Image (tube, rainbow, N blue to C red; front, side, top):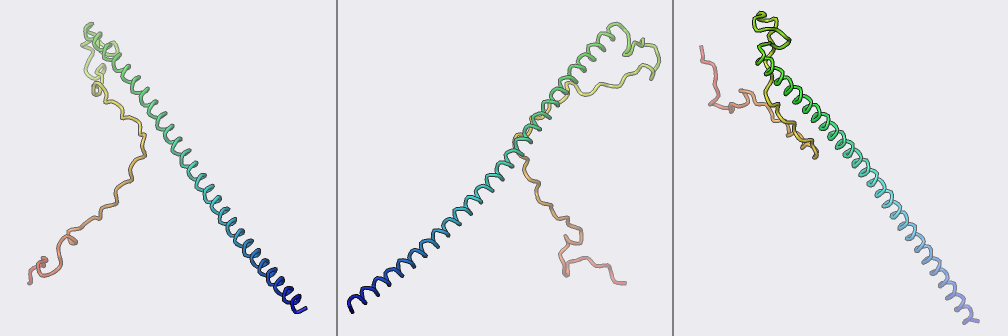
Length: 160
């Protein structure tokens, strides 16, 4: 029976150790599951942030492209109008008629036309495809007083 009592004690100790090991295992598993869930949450937030950034850049690029196309179309229309105006002036000069149907002697100011702009007009710049670089930091403004070093070399009014 001493033997049975020892076997019972050993069996209880083994069961207690087994219970402690099982509790430790469950705690470690729960910690790992929490860490994995936190990583999933962090990754989902990063994905959302990157998707939003992509959509903003895409929208900005589309806006810039549309703006460029409108500017290009306006430039082409202006170029066409200016070319037609130049042809009209040339034809009228050959016929001796001023712009607006005025004859050469109609009087100064009534039939005078403004001088045309530069020909050909300057080309449009390409659309911006890259984000603009940030502005440089503000340069401090130095005053004349700040530029003169302090000390005996400083200017002082003459003594009276």
